[in-house]
Image 1 (cartoon, rainbow, N blue to C red):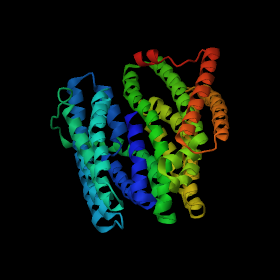
Image 2 (tube, helix red, strand yellow):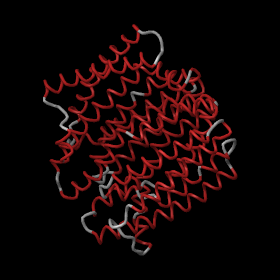
Image 3 (cartoon, rainbow, N blue to C red):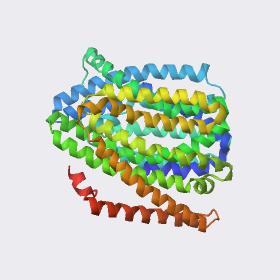
Image 4 (cartoon, helix red, strand yellow):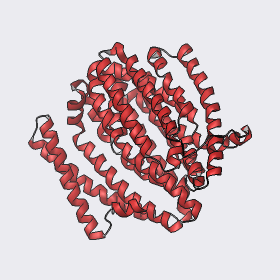
Length: 463
């Protein structure tokens, strides 16, 4: 919830303070910085979680695994930091000053231990750390960022908050795991599996980050500013999906270690029902109110962001579907090749679509490319996994169809209320939102009562 709300608090202020050009320029610098951070972490956010989750019941083996992985992390992140500095001083263009202050993000990769805490099923320290430090960062943004010339302050604040957060996370490991120097060959043994997962992680972020770089390069930073603000809302909403997958992956990896096959199948079915129910409401809700929301939230200059936001919202359904399969059926069971192939295909589709569509359609071309890429990932997963018969794809697609029908009814009701209140105001948007919640909620209750497929949160939590 905090990850969703904080960007929604700072985004309107930043949009009005620095304008579309400023938002686009920062987006370009941050996108490149984020790619370097991904290289520095080398897939550890997936591989490290799984490796720790499998040995967390055996302290000596846990300490050895943690130590070997961290030594590898120091090597890779250190080399990546040197390349990042080379980019800042010799390659970066008008975004150079902003990029220089984002260097703290690359430094933070040296001491990022989220993967270990998540593998240990310890999410409270991460949540508390993010809440306190990010709140302080947001306050600094409101106090010190006053114009486009202050974008470097914005970059420094968020970069430093990431570094401080990672350092505080290291304190949370005390008593849970201990670093013990191990032969470097043990660290290198983790390099290969990490590199395999990194290919897929990089591919995912190519079609979630490179589209901004391509829009900036081909269509200009102002056009990228419009796209950035549209995607920001969708990215915030996808945090709900990421949260479920992040929590479930170490749990399922632990079940795999213990051979609990039926329990895993039950988890996937319940998670799919929950996730599809959530993301469908988000997708149709965004489509129904995007035009009004963008003007009210970002200002009249960003009205076109609403046009981009409406179709972009439907990527949430595809992301949610693929995320459940990835975090509960693919990665915990060591089938990394499925993840790699699916996201590489998605990245290829995205880059090709962007190259063809952005020159003519500008930011809307990037939206179409993202839709095609996100659709490709679950399709490729299905083509690979269908022969095994382990996953009940027909049932999962049934959830999409049912919740999609309820979502369409909700969207029609929301648009109908909007037609009766033509003025774009916060009260009218609030009434539309309330209408959507009531209609979708009643539709879901009716479906759950008829089918017996209600989401039992207490039972899911106990499992």
